[in-house]
Image (cartoon, rainbow, N blue to C red; front, side):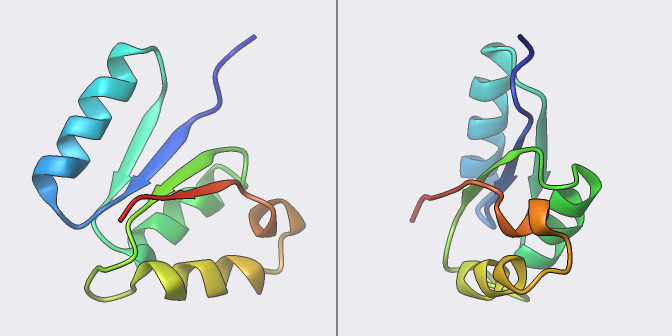
Length: 87
């Protein structure tokens, strides 16, 4: 069974890169984003078939705004994407 891709949405580059390195070493496909807007694009590209690791305090689009955008998304798979908040 293949592992679900992970989208890391974190504005702190050191944390983002560390998570990417750790998860990649564990065999996960990882996409990173520095704010919620970039994260939303990545989640949409995966059509919601991913796991999201999400920081709440970020510039441009914060984590709460991303959660709102996901809950109101037109694609039901994107609405149901699992999210783990890391803050």
